[in-house]
Image (cartoon, rainbow, N blue to C red; front, side, top):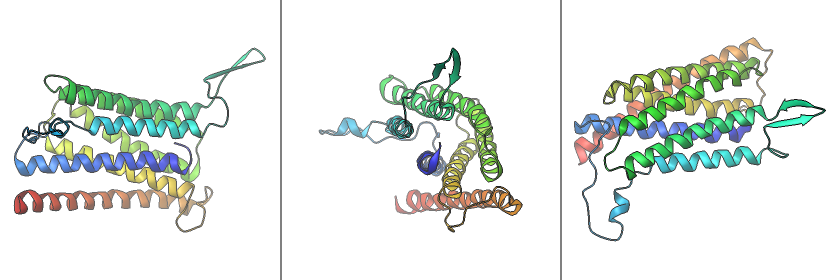
Length: 257
């Protein structure tokens, strides 16, 4: 996720996915139905009747992963290879780009599983979807840990906090395998997705396009300390967004409909 776009677009994907899950869990709570199997629209006759029954979340995951992978490949100036043999020596090339593509491959894999389970199988297999999601998080976490090896100062602190949020999300999606209809776990999952997404976007602005116009300094202890302060503000702001979503959902499902 190098560069400004490399942080902005994945962060936006995480954040929107968290918003989607927040809407699902609050709708399930207010409509008194399991989170996994929300009420679907009744079958209707017409040319677009089948399209109304299709779940598009998996397709959006696949499309997002393909766009992110294309953006990553476009940033490689030369031939994109894994190993270069020069003077009888083996050298791995583009290690960070390969890490990014592996991350995007987890999104693609999860999207494919969602499409198969929700649209192709005779009966939806929610355990399969959650298992693919948990596997993706198990892959993302060690990649993020190794991703920080060449970082220092502000960049290192920001990515350590991001790794912390991903670790908590991994614990939540793992626990969800044993309690798939727990609204508490679903709410926490939505919340951590939003935190990761908003913080990824913030990292892009801090490192490449600071809003204040002044570059963050790696040798300034105040800058490093304020990275953690800004992360805490992100956590608080995302909690406020969750409350706002609940308020809108309550107004829509309990007062309007």
